[in-house]
Length: 112
Length: 115
Image (cartoon, rainbow over all chains, first blue to last red; front, top):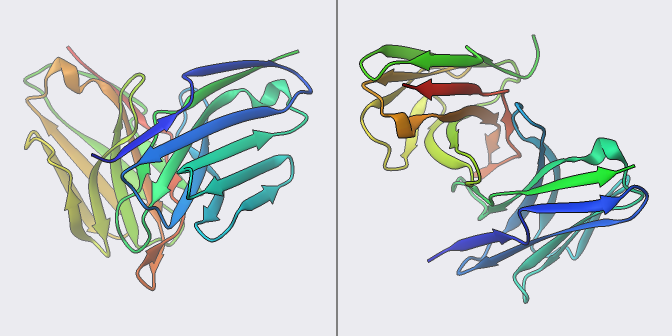
């Protein structure tokens, strides 16, 4: 069956370090992979989309990689700040009008 | 207002009550979605509407009944719910064009508690 896993339920790192979150999937061939941020009591907010033929995508302090051979995406936040503390969701997008499948998220905490 | 709005933000109801959740998007999108989010579980897609037509019903129990009167409004009618239906219900919208949907924009959600 199709499965999407985010490496850990929670991740705690020191301010200023790079946070790396992992998204693995099986039995799936997404055309796109999306990352969202969700704060407590709020809906997810879209951050980045990466296509299957792209290796890497950057936006300010964010970087996403997509390895279709390993079936894995890495999400990096460089120079992390306490304001980056949130839950981060990856989502597989098969393309077309098919539904997007979300992972259960990784709760990231950045300590000062 | 901008973006996607949802009302009410919090709802407590008994198992015999009937209530409705409302979602409105001000983004001009042509697709709208209902998701259920339970603690420590992935977002579960419930319903999808494209151009006001329901295109997905993800095996949702009939005690949940969606309604999409136009491309900007989406309702979720609730009746005879169970305590396990307590969750955060999220509405989202996106633009579908050329057979491809863009990223989704979510509302703040309705925190539902069924007693």
